[in-house]
Image (cartoon, rainbow, N blue to C red):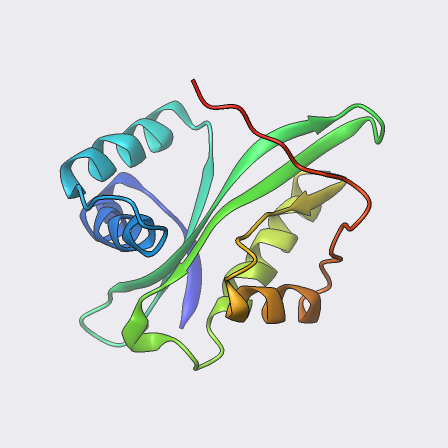
Length: 149
């Protein structure tokens, strides 16, 4: 397995994985909308997507992570939001998610960022076990709020 930056040639495979990811988070399946959303991200270059691909033929994408740029005023630097991380269910439990997380951390270093942040549901038992092992610290001091239009 290896990680590569996503390109438009991978769009059909990414869209299927992205749709599966959204369904995992209890959203309605919509591969057409997933394709359009990801195509816009790739064309506008407003996120960074890394794929985990097999190295044997046929080469296929089996996972992805998507990062969005943010800025930290207090740290006075770029911060990456690791917004999405997904491994196809057939490949889970084989140690592949850390490959994508390490690539995200490497990307943060390459871009001079001050760090990577992420959030996940408290019910995401696997993620909540993985992230501390990858060097991420749980922030228990701050409340995260959101507002939806």
